[in-house]
Structures are given as C-alpha cells and as structure tokens.
Length: 300
Image 1 (tube, rainbow, N blue to C red):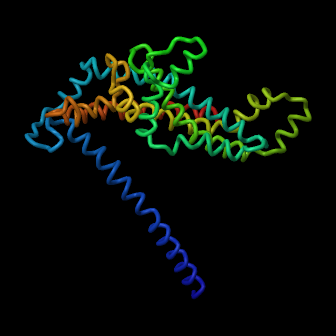
Image 2: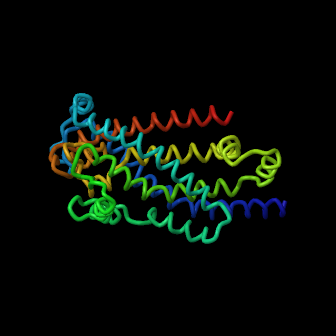
Image 3: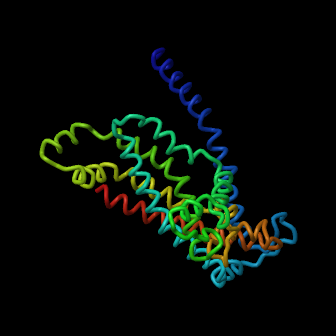
C-alpha cells in the first residue's frame, strides 16, 4: 500500500507539473483564438461597430450581403490565384533547399542559417525592404535587369504583376521554416534504405521520387496544410506592398475584413466583417479537411 501510495503521489506530481506547463498555452488559445472566434460568430448576426455601439440584430442579412458582395468574391479569386502560385512554389523550393543542405558539403550549417533567416525577420520590415527593391524608378531589381539589357518591371504598380510580386516576397520569407521541417524529416530517414537502393543501382532521381517522397509524405501533407492556411490568411505583405491595389488585384479576404473593421470602410461594418471572417473560416476548414483526407488515403 505504501508503494502504491508513493507511486500515485509521484504520478499526481507529474500531472501537476504537466498541467502547469500546458495551462498558459490553453489560456492563450482560449483568450486569443476561441473567444474571438465565438465573438465573430455572435457579431455576424448584428450591425455594429468595433465598440459594440448601436447593436441591432439583423439575422442572416450580413451573410446574404457577403454572397452578393462582388468585392469579397474578387478577394477570394485573388487568394485562390495566390495560393496556386505560392503554395507549390513554397513547398518545392523548401524541399529542394532541405535536400541540398542535408548533404555533407562544406558550409552546410551556414547555408541552413542563411536560408532560415528570412523566416525570423519581421514581415513588415521585410516588405518595406522589398518595396524599395521593387521600386520601378530606382529599385535594385530593375537596375540589375536593365544592366543586362532586360527592361525593368512595374512590379507592384501594375495589376498584371502585383500579385506575382507579392507571391515572390512571401515565398522568399516562408521557405526557411518549411525547409527546417523537411530537413528534420530527411535526417530521420534510415540510411540503410538508401544504401540498399544504391547497391541495386537506383539513381538519385529514382531514390528521390520512389523512396524519399513516399517516406516523407506525412511531413509533406503537414507542410502543405499549414502553408495553405497561411496563404488564405495573407495580410501583412499586402498591407505594406500594395494596400490591395492596383485595381484590387491584390485584395485579399483578410485585408478586406480589416478594411471593414478598422480601415477605410470602418463604421457600422464590424458585424459584416465578422460574417466575412466566418465565411473565410469555413473555406479554410473545408480545404484543411480535404488535405487531411488526401493524407489518410496516401498513408493507407
């Protein structure tokens, strides 16, 4: 009995320590994620401003207005185009970089740090630097192109190139963190499998596509899911680089929600912005479920 009591007390002490470490994260999630989500759903049935003044219950009228709002669906089309460009580029480049720095080459650790540095840089600060680099008059990128006889681009001031330019900035800043995750997956690969494949005469491309990719598929789907969610939440770079322009070509749902809540469209629009955020949440949830289903089917 004494030993059992001692064992239980030890287990209880471990549980207390565990709950102590987990509690701040749970509180952070409840205060900054769960409560705002519930509040957004509640506000979506009202017309009000961000100070909750003159609240009037209007039922589903905000959601009806969202489905008729051409500007909102324009932002959805923009974010889908951005996702089609940014997500494959981000995942492929980060996997390529992880494969390169996983090799035993001189300065591999230095390259890992250099590739990862943009990910820890403030997105606002990095966007301001890129705003200067992409300036059509005196930007460094156009100066480099013109020095080799290529005409400079209107990177951010033309509707045909603005979204692509924003994509370049976000991919540059996002590949580092995904590279680290891919690198961890590659370093956990059993070396015996590669040695056996090389003995059987398999080339590098065969090893990569027939062995490496299937073995890191769970990591691939995790990165794909997180990158997709991040793509649908694009805001910082758009705010600094283009402010949704030109001609709404880089307008994103999150930026539009911000405009209706705090920006140029602010006023009694908080309820409408909350309805827009609910629709965006549903879109992200559907995409996440589909990716999760693909992950299950691939790992069976």
